[in-house]
Image (cartoon, rainbow, N blue to C red; front, side, top):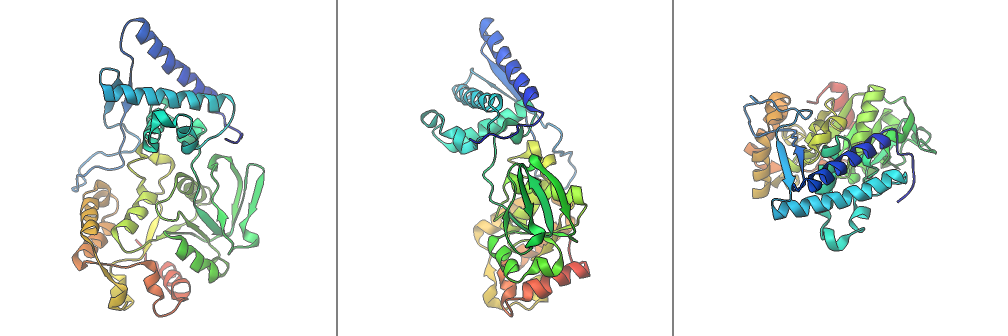
Length: 361
């Protein structure tokens, strides 16, 4: 658990922690079973008509956790144990990961997911983000291209070598002196595609920034992308596989995830545009049948559930139409399928052609 600046919110968060503990002690002194009340948030509902009032900044109900129920008592016990660890991190100006916290009491926590749930509950209870608790994610994102910034006492000058991969900063709040001469940001779903573009010197030739979350993006990648787009006012495009999971990753970047709904406003990037791969692309670019795979029953089930999400009707109806076409066609394909004719097709024709021609939604 490395030391680092904890930011200006630490005193405020510590004060809230003391207030919560004081309230629980008062309950015990008055012979009442201690309890806490949590707001509940969501990024979407399953009203496919779009006639709903979903908003990530508004609570959509409350949940009371007390010692009345055995399951609640265990959850509250774990929450208080994690809260004590977080208090210590803040007081000592240190940082730790969720995994670090798990190993403080592995015989009590038993599973990592109970610690994850406790941290989410604590964020909601204290009305703050996870980084304000000095709980840091394990970063996995990569970036390259025409950008320069400092992260604490380290300076990252990607511009000097725009085709070299750098790790996305974990402590996004510590990023300063952000500078870029890029024309746009390209987000790609997979590391294999990222490496393909690096090998083709894509950033050098197209004066852009490329980022990958290597699958479903971690918190740091999403926060850094939002910071990049907002601070530099750059257009942002996203390239994902033509399957339900690729589209779900795209939606995570734009709308946020249900799991982190309470913090969606700090991570979602509403400016993101879907560059591909579209279900219609396999016809447009004459992909051979051997590059197309049938949708599995699991794919169909996931796509069907995604079509029910209210934001597809309200904010991204064109995405919804493409997803419906994917189901109708019954096939999927990976980004790499576009390289069937030429390894350089993706970097020299497909991506530049779509961006220059405005072929994105």
